[in-house]
Image (cartoon, rainbow over all chains, first blue to last red; front, top):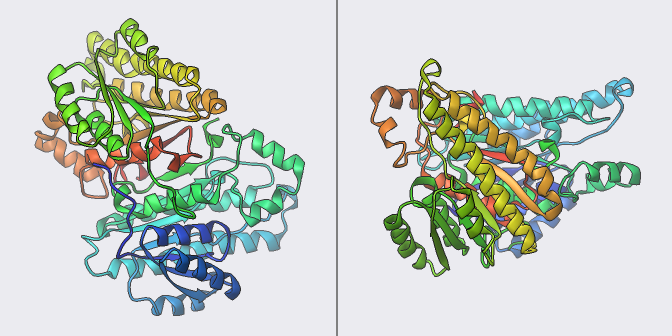
Length: 254
Length: 254
């Protein structure tokens, strides 16, 4: 009756896999048995993640790649023979009040969080559609969204725009890729203990204000998000598509 | 437990399941037992409660049953307040009487409101109070909702009214119970093939309607839903509360 989170014989690609959530997802997928392909701009980070995966007796392959560079992305995809799972994770945030958002920041965030996310998803989907036995062995794409893909928040207007966009993209992709037995979902975490969030939380006033907004009264752990991603990647969720898994401690329930 | 991948384990936990003799309730009981959880089954059919006992006992967990109609508040209260262990509630008992809005009978409307709304509320309140009284470290309540708790369907006005209500209740409960570390979520399946829905599927037109509306061309299985319920019951989802897992093959993504 209970379907286990088992990814044996599946290949997964994770972007932004050098740090934070991407790293956690890569390791969790390897722990569930997947062969993991990790992408990051920073070689030394990739080396560290490779080592952790090796320790868990998993297998991984890494590529230094900036996902905003379409040509580099294409080159990486050419070197991959089969793909079953994509964790479309690379992203960033530069909080600014709406009236003060600089053009440079808006361009940077939108290029990374939307344009690159779209490109990665499209290139990987093209590969996933062609995989042998796709009708039998389902594919799964998980976009790293955010609770801010569901509700607004001060100083997060560009990030809101980007992540609401990803929620839309996921639903559109789900409709179009269903005939190929490829599922598309998002994971929407609240603030997670990652290097990015640690930086924001140096501002204690901000930290306390955010914690007050999480009914469970704690930030998410990287493992909370990575486990949700692994659940969506595996056949344990084989009828779940075009939806979001909220890992937000109740933030959006209010 | 891996470094980043959490196990779906319910060892040492006790789960109460309403409507446990058939369909989704029975599936949830078996899946929870497979994850190591002890079972308290509520149902109205003694023969089926006995046959469930046999199945659960094979999985080497404890089994307790109570033959009771969830509408019987006093008997439910007496039973639940006597429990020595309780961590999880699968608030499943529910029913449906499909009728076109203009022709909905007063009696069917009353029945659905009583079972799907009032009894669901009462069982949830009784169990939450008992989990708090027993000072359990954490708790998880899963309300069985439906895609018709998110969108409308033909001849589903009353059902939608009750299930949208359950969605609201879930979010409200999540906020009130967060400080006790009791999480509250719902699962929203598409129409699952169960003893109750078998008669719907016998209708060719209905079959076509389901197929045309489900991008992933499969019927949701009891095991699909039971797996999501078990995931939400376990600490693998410890930051997920006030939310819904939609298991609909993309029905509501359109």
